[in-house]
Amino acid sequence: MVNPEEKLTEPQPEGLGHEDLQPMPPASGGGRGHTRGIVPTMRYDIGVKVDGRLRDGVDEARLRRIARRVLEAEGVGKAEVSVVVTGDAMVRALNRRYCGEDASTDVLSFALREGEDFVLPPGESLLLGEVVISLPTARRQANLAGQSVEREVALLLIHGLLHLLGYDHAVEFERERMEARQEALLAALGVL
Image (cartoon, rainbow, N blue to C red; front, top):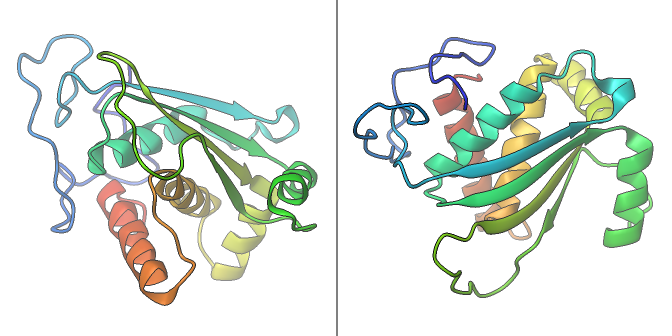
């Protein structure tokens, strides 16, 4: 279980701390496995896989914490999601195969659910899907923007998760809504 006192790369605000975010009520009891601000019934299975060649500089535990906090802030109950950090060649191959675009990109999201929600049996996890991040692209984008690679990877993870949760940016008002939510989540995580 993640230690709630662990910090991301920057100091964390107390609670979520952003007026647009609605934090969950504090867990009662405080026993093992309960962290501040999480409803006790919320459980997440967050798998993180980093391409072996790219392991240096990628903090898998940090990615899990970010994903968990995004799911909490979005009010997602019990859920499973996978995060893959890989290189441009793999992202390009996936983008070509599944999106019909023969180019690398920064992040891809593969939702396991589309359209209308269906009722899950009691105790079952919502299978959200997979977020695939190109670390070389994230590094290039961070350099161009004059920001840390950690912030860029956090932004891409948040962006991918929001896609899995139904956000999109195909039209202007959707793009504005999604960008505002990304920035609010980055601020709540203390990743500015």
